[in-house]
Length: 296
Image (cartoon, rainbow, N blue to C red; front, side):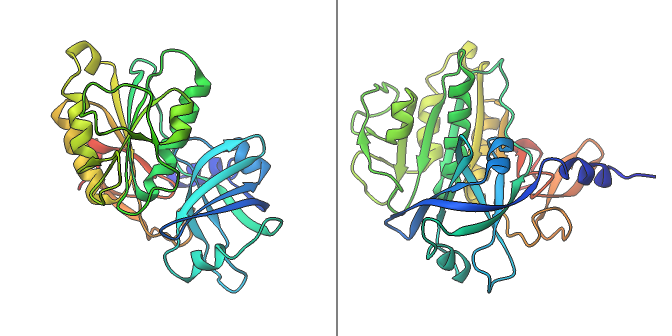
């Protein structure tokens, strides 16, 4: 008898690819952060918001590293990462033209509901890329999507801060810094930090998000859905905030991974299912889960 896990593995064989990607550009930012643009046509074509790739950092290092996709364009995708450990430091030493082995795209994506076009995107640190990806996805979908993005970082943001031209009466006028890319797409974006960066909200992303949610009418809340990615304590707080306003919430969990394709189960987390608590793998059963089903 074929198990559910075996059926899922068979499906993944048609959607996960191994490609020799070509590094097109690599841009360095303060805080040991890098944005890479890699040409990998199959991976880029199949990627969805929430997908990640497992990349080889160096031939001398057998284990790959999982990195969230920030956006795709044509036959390329972009990743943003902070160098933690030797592997990502070695990856940062690659140069345009170099080949990078890519396994992906992997994972269950975010699934926005058309009945809730007011999307609240909350990203923290290296959890920012999936929020950019879902914003770009909504932009390309067209229609009535009106996302609000709230991004946080305790190290310099991996982009030049810009004073927003979009008014946000739900927060103080001094909270004016935005991510230029999202601003250019016409989306509301505000930044939060405790590091004192000019124009940023001094506090947690959830505090700033609460300010916005508290101004919405019952009808507007009925059209709102929350998406988030970042450190686990932040995601737990986001889930609590969504529960406070009785909003659906999808979170992309961050866990250490070895194989990233479901074989080792080293990234398993406890999830509440209709049959009770169960361990599910972040790599292939996630990384995106219903926040209200996660046993925090």
